[in-house]
Amino acid sequence: MAVTIATFILGAFFCVALAVHLTSVLIVILRARLADRPVPAADQPAVSILRPVCGLENNIEETLASTFALDYPGYEIVFCVASPEDAVIPLVERLIAAHPAIPARLLIGDDRISANPKLNNLVKGWRGARHDWIVMADSNVLLPRDYLKRLLSRWTAGTGLVTSPAAGIRPQGFWGELECAFLNTYQARWQLAADQLGLGFAQGKNMLWRRQLLEDAGGIDALAAEIAEDVAATKIIHGRGLKVRLTLTPFPQPLGFRSLAEVWRRQVRWARLRRVGLKVYFVPELFAGGLFPLIAAALVIAAAGFSFAWLTGASLLWYGAEFALARSAGWPSSARSLLASILRDLLLPVVWISAWTGNSFVWRGNQMAVAGRPVGAPLAGSQSPAAPDYL
Image (cartoon, rainbow, N blue to C red):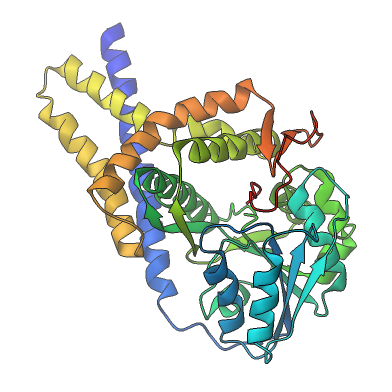
């Protein structure tokens, strides 16, 4: 009887996990279909776009140049750089000079209001922005021409913030594919599905604010309450009884080459930040991948004496759904992508455990703690503006 009950529980766990998995995939596919429709030409208020930059990242000229090509009648660009020695400054100045029709400025300086270097970099941009609608957009995000329209179209009644995750595109090498497997069919999928259920939370890659709303909460300094500005933003908006809404689809981030070490450090860093700042979302992540549901399926199949061809079918259904989502959304989708998704799910429990067993990470060359306090001096050579590590 005990074996029968255990088998039933395992079977139920697999069925529920598969149903949730397939539902989340379907939700994101349907959202992408809606996003194909023209964005309504509603009110188009003037917008300030803040782009914090640090160093010469992969594809940096392409992503920054996309800010000047938006199909929108009135916006300004404010580039924020912390160090006057940063190697990205000549590139920014060249782009500004090449697009005289678009109001754009470069602000240099570092306002130390927090342990978060990106937030410190953004302070001067927020305070110097000319418009009441303000977008914070990471430098490695490629902005489509309808970027601002898509953000503003999601500002409906009860909204306090519009945000969007990034979708990895153009990976080079297998570890770039692994980064895509984390960013796209895992993290973006769950974030978009959660938003559909009214459970949206901020993603620091892209955030659209109404200035007065954040000013009423204490201004940009209020985002220093957490080590991650998007966690602080989520808590501010939810605390005011408002919703964080996501765009229907993510905005692209061209990845280029990634090493395994880079992917690992980034995932552990984000996991530790979620563990501290958004624990209610983070705890269930252990079971969000395919590893445990498929182990449960294998145990049920073995107990029932079925052929393990059933396990192959279950695996194909699980990862085939992810593949279909990636193909439908135009994200990287190949045999290598499938292998990367399987490896990602094998790594997810390790990342989850690492999030609980450590409190520090390297962020922009500084050894940081998830509580928001530096735990050591900057690493040797870490202040080189050619080696950003905070996006």
